[in-house]
Image (cartoon, rainbow, N blue to C red; front, side, top):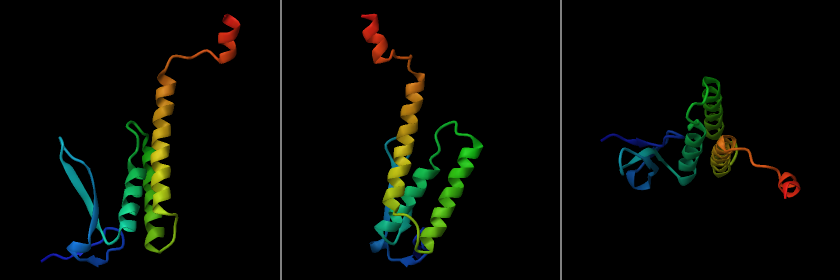
Length: 121
């Protein structure tokens, strides 16, 4: 029987104690991503995944920076240091949403400033 190991710390884990998270697969299916010895390690993986999830059309430089940040975070967490994974996940998701909002705003037609609307009335 093949032993299970945590995708973060590489420690052996029992199947009953394993944690995972799922992502969307093809159609309505979900795919389990890795196995983790704790919810903290699962959250580390989710944070790294959020960092690596570069926006569509991101430049090679952006993708490489994201990979370097993810690698450095993983190395720090494996040494027992580094930021809280929940904070990293929140920041990555916030940045993604902010970037999406900025892209949508730049595509919208220019809106007059409130002063321009008042003076036109």
